[in-house]
Image (cartoon, rainbow, N blue to C red):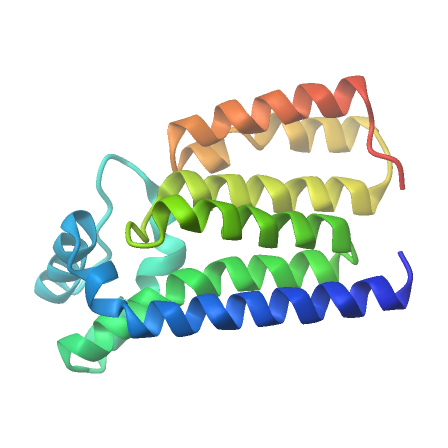
Length: 190
């Protein structure tokens, strides 16, 4: 990919995630007072530890933000704002890794589009583990394309991957396995 494509992807992704972060900040009450999230914030502030339910350890990636805020004794409204924007920040970090570290603007753009399309369904249900697992799967395939090979090492890494998104949500593994099979049948071209 040329530099122009990477720059335009960076601009599009940066503006998209900025808009999502601003919306997350504006609507933090609607996002954090909703069912599971309010319970998790309560658990984090009450116990001083992360709140993992149903063995969905993918939540660790976003729960450290309100946990640190709790340790700093920040007010509840600030914890809600940090948590609301932090979930968007998780996806933005994966976008930056795909774009700048792995130099895969197509996968970075895929992540942006995935977030935009899933937002129409899940913006106010911010702690959706399935989306976190699928975003990690996109990152993994960006890494595979960056390596540009189908060697035994990468195959073993691919076979060990499905349990990782499963820590976020079990259905994430189904998506990962499906795309891993497609990758083995039709390898990504560098």
